[in-house]
Amino acid sequence: MIPRLSTLRLRPRLLPALALLLSLAGCARAPRVEPAPGPLFFPPPPLPARVQFLGSVSSPLDLPRPRSGFADFILGPPPLKFPLVKPLAAALRDGKLYVCDSVLNTVIIYNLLTGEAGLLPGDAGNGKLQQANNLEFDEQGNLYVADKKRQAVLVYDARGAFVRAVGRPGEAEPVDMAPAGGLLYVCDIKDHQIEVWDAASGALVRQFGSKGNGKGEFYLPSQVALGPDGNLYVTDTGNFRVQKLTPEGEFLATVGGHGTALGNFAWPKGLGLDGDGRLYVADSRFANVQIFDPEGRLLLFFGGPGPTRGHLDLPAGLSVMPWPEAPWLRERLAAGFVPEWLVIVVSQKGDGMVNFFAVASDDAPAP
Image 1 (tube, rainbow, N blue to C red):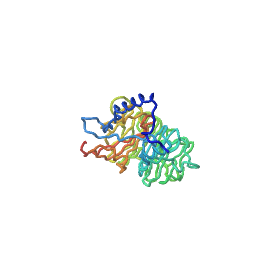
Image 2 (cartoon, rainbow, N blue to C red):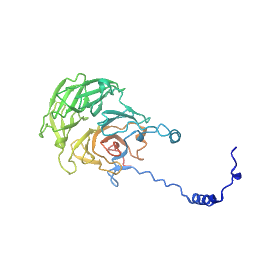
Image 3 (spheres, rainbow, N blue to C red):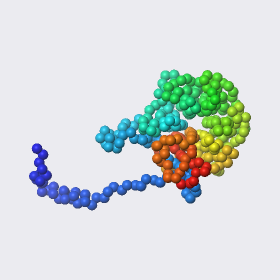
Image 4 (cartoon, rainbow, N blue to C red):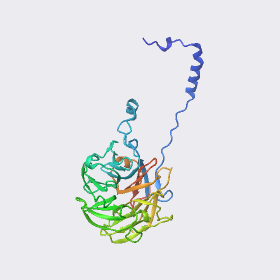
């Protein structure tokens, strides 16, 4: 039988301590709750906001939580699985974020809808990745992963099952590719050129470029993308520029150049284009992303070195897509901000690795 409090006898020497505790409890203040940080815009006020930083993902802890805080209190927090170590590239499809990690040598999948995390199912056996450098989806939802060590591009279907590996072992070292129309436009960093492969067989269709710094020549080509105009855009990293070419390899224009002025590059890496033809280029040394209009004129930049919120740390991969209907992203939008494009920028280290930025439409009013 448990005795009632009124029947308990307290030792005399405990009474002063009890009185002190009661007096302290009466004077205790509620813990201070820090206000949530406000929206982060680029350019900063008072200029009209065109880009908003939404948040970042570095591990499953940054995803929507499928369990409540009370469940975590009772059962304990879920085990931390699949944190990023050194990511290089990311892409979002159907609410799932696919991330290449160069240390883990695999593709990690984060579900932004359910909070689940896992590995690419087909990353085993013949589909085993050895050095995942970059990834891209085609219109059918097939996933292409450039593997420099395997000297191949590995293809997985929309469910993540391995389909085939295509490449020219001993002849090319692919670090990025752009699938389109049954072809793969491949950055071959070994011979400093662009190769065009048949996407089904890997057979060489054509190749263009060579090591150099002239028009149509490359030094360490690292990223390639197809623009809405049908032309190729190549990050010519070692020459500190982006080159624009026809799909047949005819030189059209250059964007950027070596320097510290706005519009120049120090070490350009990831690139992408939106449907209006704007070019986005991530610079690892500047730790920012610069946006250029279709004529190659600088519009603005965002990001910047840390440790502030929305900073970038050795950004490598970049992807641009139409604004998706993803609750995890939508709930982070500032009131009145109307997004048209989502830009994903991958930092190789730091607190925020896969970073999400919303880009407003041209005719959207500033919030």
